[in-house]
Image (cartoon, helix red, strand yellow):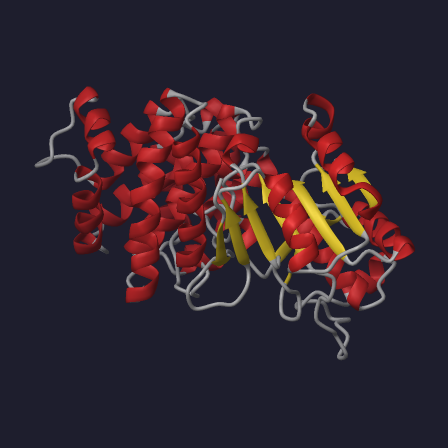
Length: 408
């Protein structure tokens, strides 16, 4: 097998990206040649550790280079658990942190490295690294211990230099950025990703699609971001459809993984995005109500597209996405099955058809959210930055209109 290796993004040195080799082979190679690591600390998802032999194989192959292993972390990256890992990695003097999993593990590892560089061991000290904390310290040092992420979903956090985690003493979720460094290396292994439940794989894929669509719908995007977003859609849409049809299609899964990379390339350029997104959009407020990140995009993206189109906010940009989707043969199959016609179907219709074809939720009622919760969600959404930069201006009534479009 041949490895493809180099910067994940053409205009950035890090993160590096490796694919083409089994993840164990790639990690063994780069632990030596890229990082010269001898004390490797592994954070592995509980499901991978309990239901597969992948962690055992990794430990066997790394041998005495394994300095420690953490199995499982709770959702939303709790500060108490992060601090436990900080203490463990400090005790063994880890020189490389590896995550085997996704989501919370990725964010936790980034914050662990950041905390190690700043000699953090308590909640109060961790709080002092938050950009918005009134007790933010002045002498914050950049992350030092490199992080390698081996993702199993399409969330894309492994490509970013910010992280979110929840202070479980207050219940508040905080973002870390600035001197925090993103992962140094991302290793993609489509065979490993087959251990991910289909619903998680597909819904996090739609989250990545949402990033692409919102970038292309933005009135303040730029050519570079648009190109990343188009490239991402051209990989994600057929890749997700083929993954649904055959979950063991490794080429389709790699296509999805590379599409998620492109989606992060698009949304990490600072383009003001719109209201559907899980991070800083209406979807951000569905999370505390118990809706997973990917599912929020499945429910909200078509409705936000329709709302903006009806308001005449970004008609030309939406029409360009419509054209792009109709050019994809796998998407056209879905549209034909749903009876959609190119002359009459809007972007919301096309996205709805794709999401339904993947068997993912499309209404709030499917995820247990009723009318009684809409007012609070709408009010809280107005504080999120991408609701404020939605192409069509939004007030509480506008957000409620979007939410009611997907209530049942």
